[in-house]
Image (cartoon, rainbow, N blue to C red; front, side, top):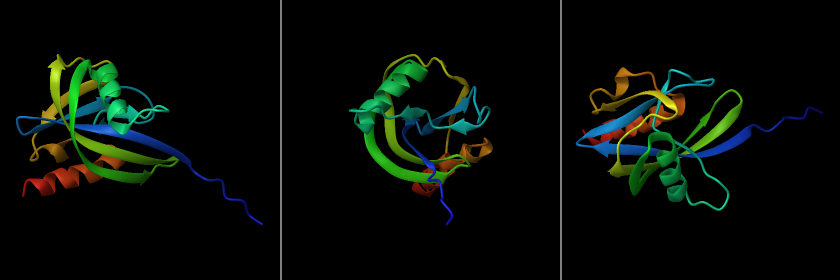
Length: 135
């Protein structure tokens, strides 16, 4: 009998921060996926709602306060060592000056430029949804 080890499950939230028709893309500054681009966010802590986690993570990573405007989508992706579930929310900045605390770069991209950077695989589905919204 063969025993199949279940894949590690990770659940995160991502902020699709919109400003004047552009979206904030952040480039990872460390770890296995260093150099790839993502929508900023992070893990949900025990007892937190998705929205609370997103507000906390963006404050920690980017030093800005956001308003979570609406849920956009939930994506699932199987990486080599884990399964990722990512809840994505459209957000807007309400206060603060953008400061990169964990990422090495950030860009504001309109839908024509979203495909010009190398995204993490789980974020690519979000790009397709954003691109379809503007057609």
